[in-house]
Image 1 (cartoon, one colour):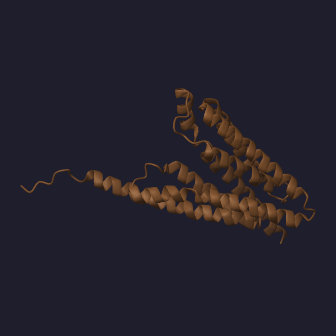
Image 2 (cartoon, rainbow, N blue to C red):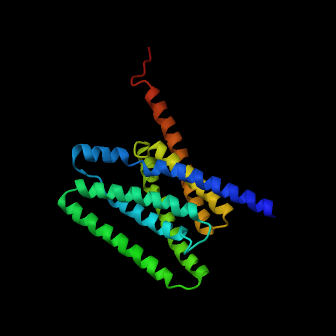
Length: 233
């Protein structure tokens, strides 16, 4: 039993480390957008809402990973700490280059995120029973993760309607899939439903995205090879 527990612990840590590596693919994906924003000194028609929502998600999951809420979830805490720093940096850049109206809106949303996070932290600390506290925060983090993983459904719908993968970057979809699989395994080896359940859903949605990407990429290549004028001579 001790040996089995040790093997599970090693597998859990290995999955967590892999999840951190693949998560960087997600955290770095907006860099091209912000290079353009900095170069043009304007946010153009870009929306700052995805970064606001991603920050809130990282903060909630970070809190769930702390020893005050759930034991043996250090990897969840660290990956979401890194993610929160990235999202905050993107939000600051967005506010810096946004028009006045967008600046005010984004500042208001940022303050609302921090206020909501403070409410979650202080509220959960009022629950003396550690198991109940873990369940409450776990449900919140699970709901947040599921809704985040569900957001690509709009992109999937767009890909099917337009029969084009232009709006679904391959490496972003691949990073999401690999990170979800890694933390799904991390949650399984850690016996944590609130980690493996949402990441399992994320892995399934990642498979759907990758299948659609390869299918419509192949369709586009076949259509490009077809001659524009068919000769009957």
